[in-house]
Amino acid sequence: MSPPRAYEETQAQVSEIHLVIDRDRMRTFLPFVLWTLLCCPAARAEIFTSISQMTDLIYTEKELVQSLRDYIRAEESKLAAVKSWAHRLDDLTRVTTSDPEGYLAHPVNAYKLMKRLNTQWSELETLVLQNPSDGFISNMSVHRQYFPGDEDETGAAKALMRLQDTYQLDSEAFSRGKLPGLHHNALLSVDDCFDMGKTAYNDEDYYHAVLWMQQALKQLDGGEESVGSKADILDYLSYSVYQMGDLARAIELTRRLVAIAPTHQRAGGNLRYFEHLLLKQLNEQNQDYPPAPEEPIRLGTYRRPKDHLPEREAYEALCRGEGLQMNEARRSRLFCRYHDGRRNPRLLLKPMKEEDEWDSPHIVRYLEMLSHEETERIKELAKPKLARATVRDPKTGVLTTANYRVSKSAWLEEEDDPVIARVNQRIEDITGLELDTAELLQVANYGVGGQYEPHYDFSRRPFDSNLKRDGNRLATFLNYMSDVEAGGATVFPDFGAAIRPKKGTAVFWFNLFRSGEGDYRTRHAACPVLVGSKWVSNKWIHERGQEFRRPCGLTEVD
Image (cartoon, rainbow, N blue to C red; front, side, top):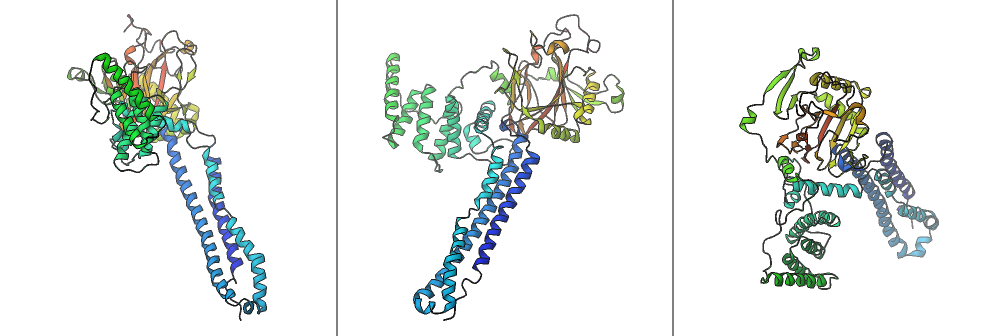
């Protein structure tokens, strides 16, 4: 019997598979190492506070997907080799078992059997034990330190709730991606809505927990699939509704929970407790037992609890474009003009286009303040320096992060690039104010729901120590370095003004009266960014050095 040729090239094939796996592993791993060393000098934190830094994650995820595909190809290649072994062994064993003695009578067959079992099966074992996932896992390990953490996920969830409140959007709008100005549809699953509600619940924010658990329940009842159970949703929803003071609905939801999960550890006890409270309440008020609520929970069913901000409603209304105090009489006092900075030589041939945004306090907008090239260069300089924006604690004077300021900022010096010196000079020419005592150019990028709630730019007495030398913040010069599809306006709740971002323009106002007293009307806010990425840069100009450029007035409010 002649020897079969089934295993003539087996050893070469196994070696080739090993090379394919090793080559794929190195090809996917080395670029990630180089990318990390060159582009990621330090681990990031609070990524959700800056859209700019979140865009880097998009490309990171793309690279990881490619790495995953390389891993899949390596696994498929390995599996194909193992299948080839199995197919050839099937053919071989059919021959050898039909006449074992006759097969081994041929000395070559006897030799190949010894070789096959001693060497080639060991190579097959090595192939099977080899793990092509090593390269993918290595890539994951390299990038994991730059991944968002629990704080980012929680911060992004709270940002959606902040947008929901400010722009009066129900959970359905977010879940279905029905947001103004959007070019991409982004849907939230049942489990996404459940996790949003759980984030609020864990923060004892039962108002938002109700809205998102109700949305999760609605989508689940509509036939969507989910990993979580209906019982879990009803458990969180019923207790959150109870916390909102709606006992009748809490009882109805808990009865639904008991019906689908009779052995639930809390449902029975909660139901008896809720019913007891409701009966006690009805007896005290001498009322009959109310019917089960028929209307579904929606935005407006419950009133949002008050918080620390007294002008919350007015501020959010302005962000939505409501409550604006612009009228025909005031509009008639607003003008546009060419501004040459009192015949400043640098502005004579190309004066600035100046438009009045508000009459009192006087707020002006300058068109074509920054060119596209200048804005892009400033962004490029700022990106590596972006860090979570801070505020000064009014009690301790220490700089700290705060939920009412969600952005990342960087401070740029004239030595960083000629464009910074050029922009500073332009600001000085336009305002006619001395910039030697001004703060560095601050660049800010707003993240998911990025905002800065109502605040004063000037420091209220007693001043902190760093203002005693250069004086208070006399004026604010704010550059808009991007257009924003929706949201992101600068609003002044005290007098009902809203200024929309427009790339390349700048707005300017004085924070202090000529007497040095703070103008409390200038309390302003940066509305949450609903859609888009908002970039701004600002220059805070201080009192020292302005003695002859903006002399004192005769009264406190001149």
